[in-house]
Image (cartoon, rainbow over all chains, first blue to last red; front, side, top):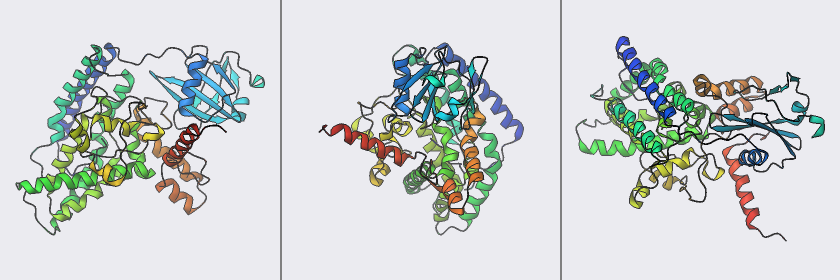
Length: 139
Length: 305
């Protein structure tokens, strides 16, 4: 449903526009509050290795996964697939996956127990998971 | 007639709100499938709510251009002629198909449209995850031939509004399939779930606005299959609910690519190639993903020797 930009006369007075915006804003907040209260989010338990592999297979169906490290809170996972690293993290009740060069992951700094990964996408640019048993040498 | 006597979208806003409340209620009572995540819903509704602000920047230009073309029209279609409304219904829907296909298959216009597909959910709030940069992307030019043919700016605006309102209700998992005759002719929740899916089989399919016949005519139709549930969102899903990221991430990505371009060919490819185009072919496009998926399917069917 992309809005194709209708040729409407743009002469709406600014105060009326702002009033409409304010009323609509209240309606939005009410709907969001009701959606939250209704608890309609997908069940999203912490990742275990099987779940991480299954979710990564959705995004990278051809990848042979050599090893998986899980975040301590189950909200992220890092996997090695040959010369590639596959990174999975929770966003709300869904998951987001990224891939990057394994060499970048192997040389990424660990500060305060957190691995600092630079991702190439506009969002997010950085990931900082705490990975259980992390050691790039062991991969 | 220049100014539309009514705006179908504004008239439909109470219906939009009530329909979302109904979908949430039915989901809560487990009478229908409805999955809502609060921050995702807030992002979708905020995109719809605030789209009027950037639209103000181009509304004058779009209106003036449409009026100017209409003043140079070759025929005059009376506003109150029934045949005129029948004609504009089909013509607008065909133009919408072209516009929508262009918005998926060429990156410059995908950058404007991608935000609508950026939710991993499919519910009525997703329908309102509207573009902020559609006016700047210039796809409104596609509708100018209607004004040149003699349809008034008011008639064009009303028909576009009707199309937009129609497409609201199809953004839901609460409706399974409509009667077969309806599915055969009209765009439906089932057809549009396919359109929003990121499964390779479903990529770049079902561009229809109101009538699904255009997809069937031009070879882009794909029925929803019971054995393959749609997974919604983008090939590379966004990692944020920030609406500025939702609205502008692909434009920023284009800017980065253009900054790294080393030839005119690369500039043109990054701007007007398929989304995912890259000089060395190292990135995925819908076509490459579909081809690899088809190869995997074929390999799975071939018995091991």
